[in-house]
Length: 163
Image 1 (spheres, rainbow, N blue to C red):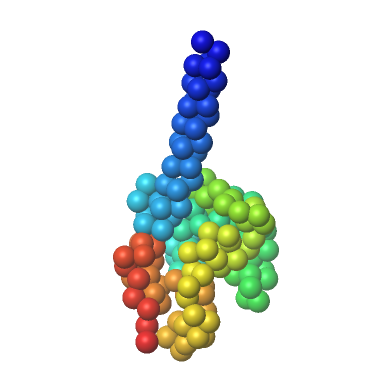
Image 2 (cartoon, rainbow, N blue to C red; image 1 turned 180 degrees about the vertical axis):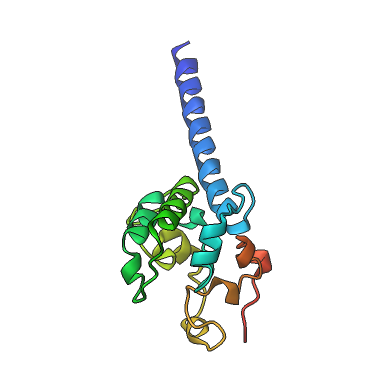
């Protein structure tokens, strides 16, 4: 009888571990494919952020990172990206409400999507020369390779690496 209890406890533990593993894998798959985590939309975010670069989907960074970025728009990666207070408040609320979760050590407040553990893992096989090529320019230019980036889709099936 005691042996059966241990076996059931172990089975329960393994089931919980499998469920957790599946949830973590689904979370990564949802970001990569755009499935399971629909691309959120907001007109102010799209027009303000998208006027200089891809309006990165909020799910690609955790809320703490979006707060830090919004707190320093006057020095946004070397550019003044400031907007009026009402627009900033609306964009901040949208980003925080649709933010992703930290996925690795240091991801909690990283300001660059390209430095998150998820991004580094997913792009580990991309050659340095690809990032530097004239048609890509940098790792921040998602749309250079991800044909669905504008719609918030980053499936590996839709990748076309420029030559």
